[in-house]
Length: 202
Image (cartoon, rainbow, N blue to C red; front, side):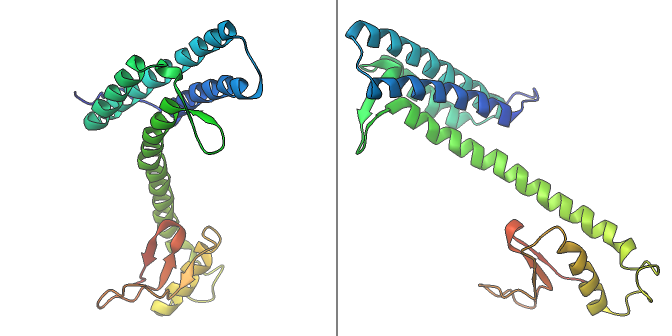
């Protein structure tokens, strides 16, 4: 399987899949809260199966688009097992508190992995990219004589002035942070835990 070059909005795709899973769970919850005749329950099970099958198909399309071949094989196999199992896509198991949809639970596991891998990493990239932009633009601010009486005289001046700018954006910024695992010949001037970044000024 080759990765598609077509642009895809991963967050939008995930939201759509989560919507399908949410609809399936909402219908299933009615089985728990209310008593239905067997014929009525059969009708609702078809509704659940439709939502679950659509969620699986959309997940496979998303996985194929981002090129995760091994994950595609796993989810495809899971889909086939779910489809042919007793109870099909609407199969439920009894948990400690109440019954739950088995295949919804198992598919959610893969969706969480995709979200962690792409959405959170993308957010981290954006934050790091923004930090670089802030540092670059601060070069002008820390030398502006309308703000300071004189240009930075040494490394400590640079450190102090840039940190004052960064604190406006990153409230968890630390000065001379202590490292859990010291790096030889490296003592960071600033640390930003929220984006796992260390900074040294020269």
